[in-house]
Image 1: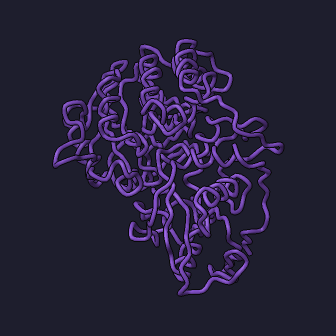
Image 2: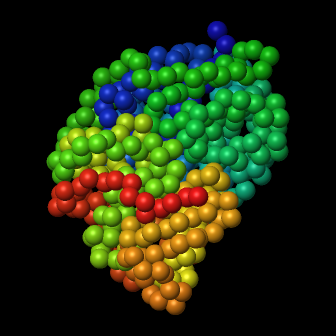
Image 3: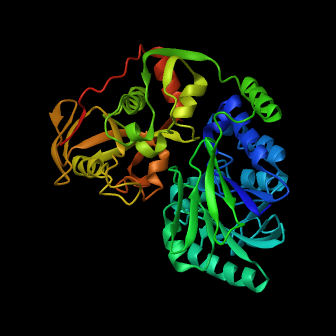
Length: 452
């Protein structure tokens, strides 16, 4: 035998399908053993449909079954408020590691968490440290009272302390996303188990092994520390054994929540893959943006691509309340803002991935309703912008229906601020469910966005 680590991350929506979460749990359990540690790297309490109903408590069904050794905090682990996060930490079996998250000048949940820790496995001492994306305070309204210190400095300090304590291998539990590469080049660590970004990854940077299992419980990573250098492989969960305890517990929670009400039907499946939702105009984005404009009477509807939760399984046939929640699974109210024509032009420009720091340069972030936009990708300019068929006038005022979240983040549509908000409506998914209930939906790609 040789020391191994079984990593999971960004479980998120897997909880919404009992079989999927059951196979995920069964796959982790099958890989576990006396020579292994199970660890999580964030966003394993939410977001998702069931997460909204239970304030993340559904994750305890999984944690109790897996009994992980360590876990770190992801940005969505704060979605239901800091008290809910503390409660999950207190009731879960694993040790939560957070070296760069503070509140009121001390480590978040100080009595319940640790910045770093060691564990001996098969004769080798492994040192672990956990860090979270510093942009979390800007991206998650529930985390605004937290301070996120420099994760590179936190890891460097932890690595020094852990090696002085006798650690043979330093492992970072990272919810930093693409900052993992900078972390590898900057800090003396052996393995960075990553999350936050949903693309899977196993490779090396500056001699450090970097991994990411992807999202929604489809894959776990198995790291082998027995050779001259750490190696890793993916374990797919789709055909894994089902942990009946977890599957049945989640099924009971879903049934009790009443999420199976059918609100409408769609004849042509609605693709909600990442490539589609970030690729420009799409049927799902149009549906949501149209629902926002319908619910508020605003001139324009806007849904950010990052707020549409991706899945490889399309929406098809009967659509339930649970399906609508799964599209935008956040307790965020729908709001109406007032913008000048000039500001609306800026907002449309900020739909381009080359205009914002979040995501990839070729991504498109704006799903719109009530608008005709012709965008030149090469010159990064608007060639035509119309609202209700008329050219946008710079000084005219336009109303915009969108998520309350966008006023608080600088990562997407920074032109929007609280000063633009004039009213608050229903929660996003409630507006979407009402629209589907009362409208014969047949979403199409109708040319409201053209990218040249």
